[in-house]
Length: 153
Ligand code: C5P
Image (cartoon, rainbow, N blue to C red; front, side, top):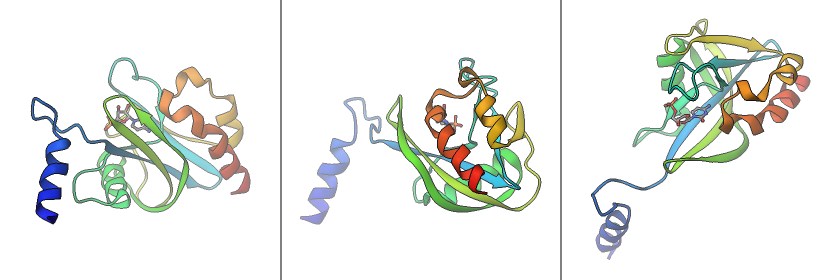
Protein backbone atom coordinates (compact mmCIF):
# COMPACT_ATOMS: atom_id res chain seq x y z
CA UNK A 1 0.00 0.00 0.00
CA UNK A 2 2.82 2.39 0.88
CA UNK A 3 4.48 1.69 -2.46
CA UNK A 4 1.19 2.15 -4.31
CA UNK A 5 0.52 5.44 -2.55
CA UNK A 6 4.01 6.59 -3.38
CA UNK A 7 3.56 5.63 -7.04
CA UNK A 8 0.26 7.47 -7.22
CA UNK A 9 1.73 10.51 -5.47
CA UNK A 10 4.75 10.46 -7.77
CA UNK A 11 2.60 10.05 -10.85
CA UNK A 12 0.30 12.88 -9.76
CA UNK A 13 3.33 15.12 -9.42
CA UNK A 14 4.33 14.65 -13.05
CA UNK A 15 2.74 16.70 -15.77
CA UNK A 16 1.45 15.16 -18.99
CA UNK A 17 4.84 15.78 -20.58
CA UNK A 18 6.63 14.03 -17.71
CA UNK A 19 8.01 17.22 -16.18
CA UNK A 20 7.95 17.51 -12.40
CA UNK A 21 5.36 20.10 -11.39
CA UNK A 22 5.72 19.80 -7.61
CA UNK A 23 6.48 23.06 -5.80
CA UNK A 24 10.19 23.73 -5.37
CA UNK A 25 11.65 25.59 -2.43
CA UNK A 26 13.98 28.56 -2.81
CA UNK A 27 15.80 29.82 0.30
CA UNK A 28 17.26 33.26 0.96
CA UNK A 29 19.53 34.51 3.74
CA UNK A 30 19.24 37.71 5.77
CA UNK A 31 22.87 37.78 6.90
CA UNK A 32 23.06 40.26 9.77
CA UNK A 33 26.36 41.61 11.05
CA UNK A 34 27.11 44.70 13.14
CA UNK A 35 23.56 46.07 12.82
CA UNK A 36 23.41 45.74 9.04
CA UNK A 37 21.98 43.21 6.58
CA UNK A 38 23.68 42.04 3.41
CA UNK A 39 21.81 42.51 0.14
CA UNK A 40 23.07 41.29 -3.22
CA UNK A 41 22.36 42.90 -6.57
CA UNK A 42 21.13 40.42 -9.18
CA UNK A 43 23.00 40.05 -12.46
CA UNK A 44 20.19 38.13 -14.23
CA UNK A 45 17.60 37.57 -15.59
CA UNK A 46 17.25 40.86 -17.48
CA UNK A 47 14.04 41.91 -15.68
CA UNK A 48 15.67 41.47 -12.25
CA UNK A 49 19.20 42.63 -13.15
CA UNK A 50 20.30 45.50 -10.93
CA UNK A 51 17.69 44.77 -8.24
CA UNK A 52 18.66 43.93 -4.66
CA UNK A 53 17.74 40.60 -3.05
CA UNK A 54 18.48 38.45 -0.07
CA UNK A 55 21.02 36.04 -1.60
CA UNK A 56 20.14 32.36 -1.89
CA UNK A 57 18.84 29.81 -4.36
CA UNK A 58 17.01 26.58 -4.98
CA UNK A 59 16.91 23.70 -2.51
CA UNK A 60 18.15 20.52 -4.18
CA UNK A 61 16.62 17.13 -3.45
CA UNK A 62 17.85 15.62 -0.21
CA UNK A 63 18.97 18.98 1.23
CA UNK A 64 17.52 20.72 4.27
CA UNK A 65 16.82 24.44 3.88
CA UNK A 66 19.83 25.21 6.08
CA UNK A 67 22.13 22.99 4.01
CA UNK A 68 20.91 24.51 0.75
CA UNK A 69 21.33 28.05 2.08
CA UNK A 70 24.84 27.39 3.36
CA UNK A 71 25.79 25.89 -0.02
CA UNK A 72 24.29 28.77 -2.01
CA UNK A 73 26.03 31.40 0.12
CA UNK A 74 29.34 29.54 -0.22
CA UNK A 75 28.89 29.39 -4.04
CA UNK A 76 27.55 32.90 -4.54
CA UNK A 77 29.42 34.91 -1.92
CA UNK A 78 32.38 32.75 -0.86
CA UNK A 79 31.41 32.93 2.82
CA UNK A 80 30.34 30.45 5.49
CA UNK A 81 27.14 31.17 7.43
CA UNK A 82 25.20 29.80 10.37
CA UNK A 83 21.50 29.66 9.48
CA UNK A 84 19.06 30.87 12.16
CA UNK A 85 15.34 31.40 12.52
CA UNK A 86 12.93 31.82 9.67
CA UNK A 87 11.81 35.38 8.92
CA UNK A 88 8.66 36.63 7.27
CA UNK A 89 6.04 34.66 5.45
CA UNK A 90 6.83 32.39 2.55
CA UNK A 91 6.35 34.00 -0.85
CA UNK A 92 4.84 32.20 -3.84
CA UNK A 93 6.85 32.78 -7.01
CA UNK A 94 5.96 31.99 -10.62
CA UNK A 95 6.86 28.49 -11.88
CA UNK A 96 5.73 26.78 -8.65
CA UNK A 97 8.66 28.12 -6.65
CA UNK A 98 8.15 28.91 -2.96
CA UNK A 99 10.57 31.38 -1.39
CA UNK A 100 11.58 31.15 2.30
CA UNK A 101 13.89 33.54 4.19
CA UNK A 102 16.08 32.83 7.20
CA UNK A 103 18.24 34.91 9.47
CA UNK A 104 21.93 34.08 9.27
CA UNK A 105 25.26 35.05 10.81
CA UNK A 106 28.68 35.04 9.18
CA UNK A 107 30.98 32.30 10.43
CA UNK A 108 33.93 33.01 8.17
CA UNK A 109 34.91 34.77 4.99
CA UNK A 110 34.02 38.16 3.56
CA UNK A 111 30.97 38.06 1.26
CA UNK A 112 31.92 38.95 -2.31
CA UNK A 113 29.82 39.32 -5.47
CA UNK A 114 30.97 36.10 -7.18
CA UNK A 115 27.69 35.74 -9.10
CA UNK A 116 25.99 39.07 -8.37
CA UNK A 117 26.73 42.58 -9.69
CA UNK A 118 27.47 43.83 -6.18
CA UNK A 119 26.93 43.14 -2.50
CA UNK A 120 26.29 45.84 0.07
CA UNK A 121 25.59 46.06 3.81
CA UNK A 122 22.44 48.08 4.65
CA UNK A 123 21.53 49.63 8.00
CA UNK A 124 17.83 49.93 8.94
CA UNK A 125 17.89 53.60 7.89
CA UNK A 126 19.47 52.72 4.54
CA UNK A 127 16.86 49.99 3.99
CA UNK A 128 14.06 52.48 4.67
CA UNK A 129 15.51 54.81 2.05
CA UNK A 130 15.83 52.04 -0.55
CA UNK A 131 13.49 52.53 -3.53
CA UNK A 132 11.29 49.40 -3.65
CA UNK A 133 11.61 49.44 -7.45
CA UNK A 134 15.26 48.57 -6.83
CA UNK A 135 14.32 45.47 -4.79
CA UNK A 136 13.38 42.08 -6.31
CA UNK A 137 9.53 42.00 -6.10
CA UNK A 138 9.34 38.81 -4.02
CA UNK A 139 11.64 40.29 -1.37
CA UNK A 140 9.85 43.64 -0.89
CA UNK A 141 7.45 42.45 1.83
CA UNK A 142 10.39 41.42 4.03
CA UNK A 143 11.85 44.95 4.28
CA UNK A 144 9.80 46.09 7.34
CA UNK A 145 10.72 42.93 9.27
CA UNK A 146 14.37 43.31 8.29
CA UNK A 147 14.28 46.91 9.58
CA UNK A 148 12.78 45.68 12.86
CA UNK A 149 15.49 43.00 13.20
CA UNK A 150 18.20 45.62 12.62
CA UNK A 151 16.57 48.06 15.04
CA UNK A 152 16.83 45.32 17.70
CA UNK A 153 20.35 44.26 16.73
O1 C5P B 1 18.85 32.91 -7.54
P1 C5P B 1 18.05 31.92 -8.33
O2 C5P B 1 17.87 32.33 -9.77
O3 C5P B 1 18.53 30.51 -8.17
O4 C5P B 1 16.59 31.96 -7.66
C1 C5P B 1 15.56 31.11 -8.09
C2 C5P B 1 14.28 31.92 -8.17
O5 C5P B 1 13.98 32.53 -6.93
C3 C5P B 1 14.33 33.05 -9.19
O6 C5P B 1 13.06 33.09 -9.84
C4 C5P B 1 14.54 34.28 -8.35
O7 C5P B 1 13.96 35.40 -8.95
C5 C5P B 1 13.82 33.93 -7.06
N1 C5P B 1 14.41 34.60 -5.89
C6 C5P B 1 13.75 35.70 -5.31
N2 C5P B 1 14.29 36.33 -4.22
C7 C5P B 1 15.44 35.88 -3.69
C8 C5P B 1 16.11 34.75 -4.23
C9 C5P B 1 15.56 34.14 -5.34
O8 C5P B 1 12.69 36.11 -5.82
N3 C5P B 1 15.92 36.48 -2.61
